[in-house]
Amino acid sequence: MRFQFDQFTGKNVLITGGLGFVGSNLARSLVALGARVTLVDNLDPACGGNRLNIADIADEIDIHIADVRDFSTKTYLVKGKHFLFNLAGRTSHIDSMSDPLEDIDTNCRAQITILESCRKENPEIRVVFASTRQIYGKPERLPVDESHALHPVDVNGINKIAGESYHMLYSRVHGIRVCSLRLTNTYGPGMRIKDARQTFLGIWIRRALEGQAFEIWEGGQRRDFTYIDDTVLGILTLLDNASKIETGNPEIFNIGGGKPASIRELIIEIEGISGSKVKQIEMSEISGDVRETIANPAKLQEFTGFTPQISLEEGLKLFYGWATKEEIAPRLQEWISSTP
Ligand SMILES: NC(=O)c1ccc[n+]([C@@H]2O[C@H](COP(=O)([O-])OP(=O)(O)OC[C@H]3O[C@@H](n4cnc5c(N)ncnc54)[C@H](O)[C@@H]3O)[C@@H](O)[C@H]2O)c1
Image (cartoon, protein in one colour):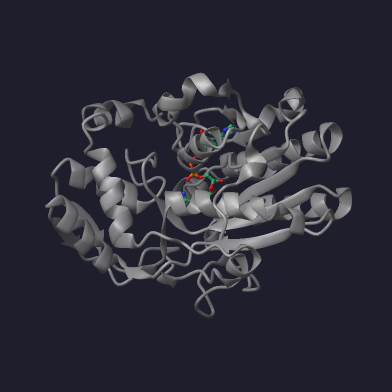
């Protein structure tokens, strides 16, 4: 596997959702690789966007606080860009059930608006869409590969299928070079830890950092977790192989598929690293909970040579180490309170 990624040097890159967890980490790597990075984000209160996520690179990037739902008036943002990382999205499964129309607005309607801007202003652009393993729903077989049937258990999953499908359509019909990455549970510095909106892991890490007990229900559920550096590396490796993605021939890849762990095993790791105790609560099955899901990463591996590098144990230590670092720990409350 090659880690140089020379092709990003001097390139113009747009990241929607760039103040969020994945977007800000990707932006940092692209700046380090010499790309000219523009971010667009509306700091949606239901999401993980936070200006502190990019505080260390703020002088080196161009930031637009704007809503991708209004992209038709912002088509200048895609002009002259070589790459678009389309990450703006609502991610909360619970919010999508209580406020489904908001989810449709960003995860469906805005996606068409963004793609229309590309079609009209910059059909040469290469687009990566952030999809999710959530769209598979309850797996029929494990590990779940990209040909697995899609039967999501919530509104968010249905809307993300639509978002991904629009991208595929614009590739097939309009020739825009597109790939979609179905992310699994990603964690690490910059994720929303204010509450459980982004994932349950966020609030657990917060509670552990605050030395408080945190609650789990049951604990037998199994997941594969991906450390953010691996997710970013996977995205960059994919684009480094972008010449294999032809016009009109979109590709979909799972990204993740590290060694799976049960929630109980995850808890033991967090307890070990933080010294915080877990309060266990008994609950019957939660509606929409997918008991076990593990992504099959073979397609991305065959296409690019990429495999995740960081184990769950190592990733949790890195994450916890980051949050307790001298320059971060005193700002953690500010980080939490400035999350919209
Ligand atoms: N983190 C994960 O584990 C995970 C898993 C599967 C899929 N994904 C996908 O990856 C993408 C990024 O996720 P993340 O974890 O970084 O989430 P995040 O909430 O941290 O980032 C999303 C960003 O999008 C912005 N945003 C939302 N609606 C917007 C709008 N209308 N206009 C402009 N900006 C808007 C938010 O303000 C936020 O900063 C999402 O599309 C998500 O569905 C993430």
